[in-house]
Amino acid sequence: MPHVVILYTGNLEAQADMGGLCRAVADAMLTVRAEDGSQVFPTGGTRVYAYPAPHYAVADGGAAGRAAGGDGDYGFVYVNLRMGAGRSDAVRRAAGDAIAGSARKHLAPLFSDPRKHLGLTVQVDEAPGQVYDAKHSTLHPLFTKK
Image (cartoon, rainbow, N blue to C red; front, top):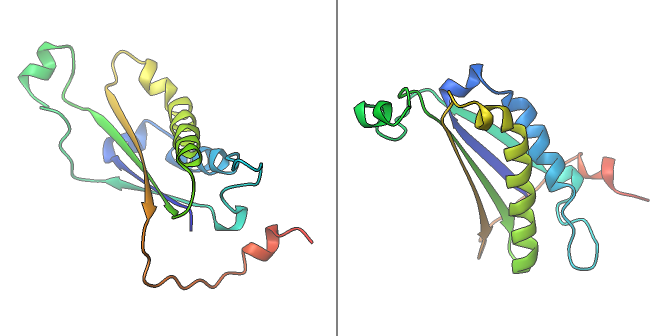
């Protein structure tokens, strides 16, 4: 069930490789290990989706921001991991740290450009008390070791 949804301001379309961010986050997820060394997120079940927001407002976008050195064209990336219940706090934190690290690394050129103003949030949610969870996939068998 591991899913990551990335929401981002549409102005980043021309500034960042968002498909590359999806791949970087997915690759980071696949490195996360449980306390016993097992892979936390199954390869065939790891999914990362990104959606631009064509309409947005970030910070004040006005005079105060410009006075502080901004141009009003601010960007934001929100990364949300939703994972099944039952993982330890350490595993949830490791997953968040892996995703945040990969996102920061991928977006480093924007963060290091003094003309760009960008925010990044990574949030990990656990799916408690699911009442229904149907799955059908031909992906998992591709990655199941025999």
